[in-house]
Length: 282
Image (cartoon, rainbow, N blue to C red; front, side, top):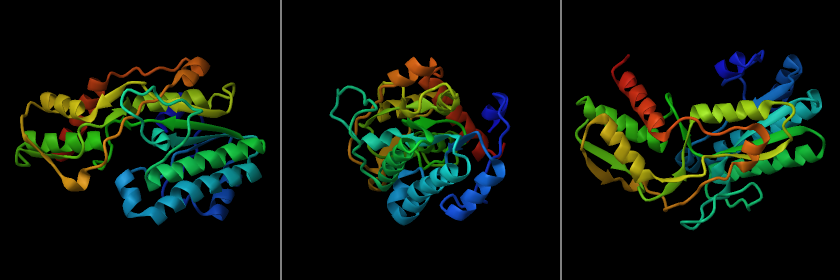
C-alpha cells in the first residue's frame, strides 16, 4: 500500500476483514469502492501450507480469484485487474534449461501452484470476455517481514537465533541443491506498479531475474553475513524434490522497462537484519 500511495494512487485496501472467497461480500466491496485498478494479492502462498490445507488453498486461491474477477466484471467492468500469480505455475525444468517464457506449458506440482495456475487461466477467460486482466507471474521473492515458512526467511531466522545464542549451533535445512529464481520483494512491487499502468497491454508477464540460484549458496551467504559456522542438518520434513526454475522476463522488460535493481546479497542481508530485530524485540 505505501508504494501505491507514493505513486499517487488513492488506495482502498482490504485485509482479513473481507473473505475474498465470499462472492457476495466481494461484489458489495467492489460496488462501494468503484475502483479503476484492482490488485489481487490475497492467497495461501506457502507450498507446505497448501499441502496441509488443500481445501483452504482452493477456496482462497481459486474461488477468491473467481470472486474478485466476477465482482469486477459485474460492478467495475472498466477496471484493470492485476492477478498476482507465481512462477511455480510452470513446475520445474531440467538443469540448464532455458528460463520459462509466458507461452510455456503450466505444469504445477502442489496445491498452491495448481490453484494459482487455475486462477491465471480463469483470468485469461475473463479477459476474453472483455475484462482488462493482467497476470503477473512472480518467481521466488523475499524481504523483511517474510514468514519463516519460506526458505530464505527460515535460514535467516535460524542464523539470527544461533548468532544471538538463542538456538544451539544447528541449522535445519531441506534440499540445498534446488536452483530457483530469487528476487527482492521491492523489485516485485515495482513490477506490479509497472503492470498497473493503463497503457500496458493485458496478458501474462513473468516477473523474474532469469538467474537460477542454488539454495545452498543462499544459505552459505547468510551464514557468512551472520558470522557463524553452525552444523547444517537435513530435516526430512523440509525436503522436497530437487527443482530447477528460472523465468524469462523479456516481455515485462520490453513493455515497461522494468529490471531487478536489488542485489541478491542485499536481499539476504535485509532479511537477516529483520530477523535480528524481531528476535531481539526491537
